[in-house]
Amino acid sequence: MPDLTTMGTRIGDLLRERGQTVAVSESSTGGLVSAALLAVPGASAYFLGGGVIYTRPARDALLGIGDADMRGMRSSSEPYARLAARTIRDRLGADWGLSETGAAGPTGNRYGDAAGHTCMAVAGPLDAAMTLETGSDNRQANMWRFAEATLAHFEDCLRRHG
Image 1 (tube, rainbow, N blue to C red):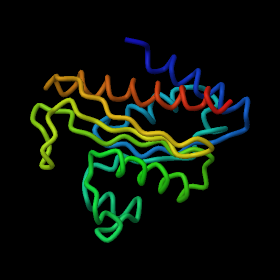
Image 2: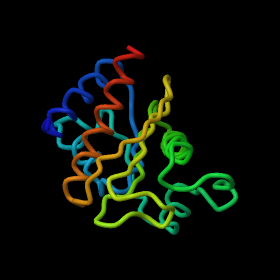
Image 3: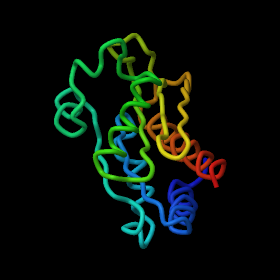
Image 4: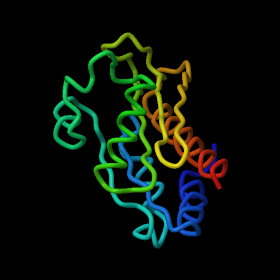
């Protein structure tokens, strides 16, 4: 497994070179995505902020996404990941929004997704979303795999847009 800080460093270098910024909304990674980006000296040049949006009250208060905005979608889905990425980007005035939403385990979520399910999205000059199914119910391992996949997805988008 790649070191999350190494991944954060590569992403930070790309953002600094381009003079771009990122904001993060994450859920089942519990802050690992933000931590990887913030572990890099000079992160204040590109990291504007973010939050662990783990509950409906957090979603309402921190993202301002209410039930009306969620009509026709559910959490832990690509449409919601896209909405969260766009919303955090816009709320913080970043060039890029990055989001992750899933079920780390050991059980699935109330939407019927099994443990090991997550969706991630990037919103910015390039928009993309993807789903990962690990097939594992190991909560900690899933959290790390979800963070790794979210960072890899973002780095891929940055390089494709570059």
